[in-house]
Image (cartoon, rainbow, N blue to C red; front, side, top):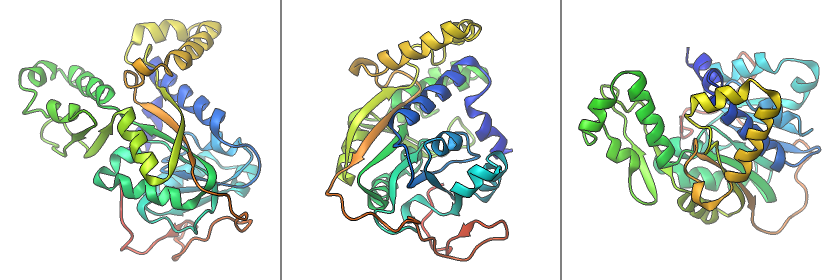
Length: 306
């Protein structure tokens, strides 16, 4: 059930498709082309894995969920992708790869937010395995976007009035958080189903710099079309209109005043430091016993982020 939900997170309403296509285009724009190893951290069922493989690189798909890795294998089956795709079961804070093993890393799925207080550790580990000059692509949930989705969920469940009448009880104040970060507590009996942090653009970029990355591009995800069903539905009916809407979103989404007004934002950052000799051609060395389906299972003491 959770695997199916994760796959359909960017399908259905037109605005969700818009968000998915903007993420994919940002990935294709910044991901280096050619051979070499790319880390895809938290690929889930493989929604963006074909985009990563399209760069021509070999991909190490790392996820802590075995069902997600199995679904990824099913959806990317074929002689060419399977030869360039390796599945590894591991946590982001304890990656089983040697330093500088990857030319780039993709961490979509708000992994920085889901890491909670371990976000700094997650970024340091990514900085360790990405070689100097390598690229990190990251998507982040902002406090404003998360508050909008929080209220949208309340409206769908006919719960919105109760949230707004008592925002402290329903954690809306915690969602908005401080000027730099917000926190969503875990409370299944209310409206908070996950425990994760939200980052503003300055806070996310400060965390990246602290870990050893230099941000080079950032873009709000659908500041025009996010949560606007009628606008995106009408545009979706016409191919030219849809293409033009996407291009407008990309241009508007890079303006400083709207960076947190869409469905979160994406950041491209470059690993700082001097470039050393190229790593081993295989690029990664997983540790631990293999499970029956061929993925690598790490020891139980490995830190968990999911």
